[in-house]
Length: 404
Image 1 (cartoon, rainbow, N blue to C red):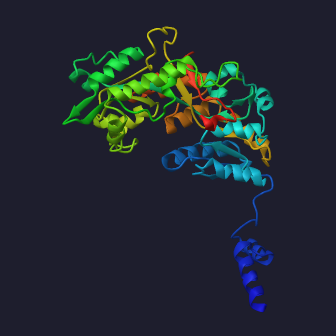
Image 2 (tube, one colour):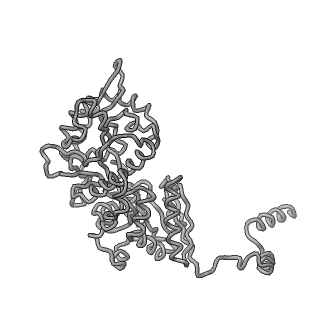
């Protein structure tokens, strides 16, 4: 019994400094207090980012702390599994603010009353919907109400290797403008040797949602009530892509060839090595090209659209990661204040520069510091223009999203 008590006391000493120890340290001048000032709010945030992306995020919140002395931010990075956040919500011990790694969770969390609705806070901060890229707020809404806020978005375009176009007898300055032209280009640019693929016309899309977006397809009808997986646009997109895979050699050959691709964020990206002549990629690609393939001669253009849909002049798909405030957040006001600051041009431009993402505020899209000064920035800016296209599609926030 005495031994158990000693062990418990030992554990207590290692977990929490006793009062006499605090007093001794204060008297010696080594510390001024045993706890942070009660006027400082400790804001806990869980984010999905790791590595360089987490460093970029930490640089942003450090900037916020400099101008908000009453806020101390404790960031837990690498929370990639949203199920971990869900467990914390269910247990009643959530962070004050968190990112959703997979936006598919937003509809379910909102439907189960786990998130703080943000409409009133949005309005009281003087924000207007017209200040934002339309899709950036749409992906944050459930049944017309706002349950999250974006901080940068992803936007997709067609990238093509000009050298490979020229080698195939194609105009290197004229990318395919329609899905029909794209299909022809894919056939011309797909190469085999000894019945084995050595080059694909189009890299298998990492983000498949870009394919339906080219056809103007919605996954949720504009009325916000009807799911539309079997719409004529979605079926046309799926049939088109099935034919593309056949033209490239069939699913078995394409899958086997793609299995040998290197990491996307590396010099072994198949678009950089010439294993894929075209790619449906996002705004991160110019930065990756500059870093890993500085001699690559490539172009960026809007994704093609069907010839019978001239109204779709610049289709694209908008995605991204969003921030939510739990309904049980201990510091909901301070969490919102941070979210509101993240929508300023200062914060948008800072994070876009560090993270190479597209600002979700229209005013920040015009920033010359992000769009000019180098070939990378100029190509980066082309994604900014696409983000404002009226022909954007996005994944809807619905409870059955995971079934898609």
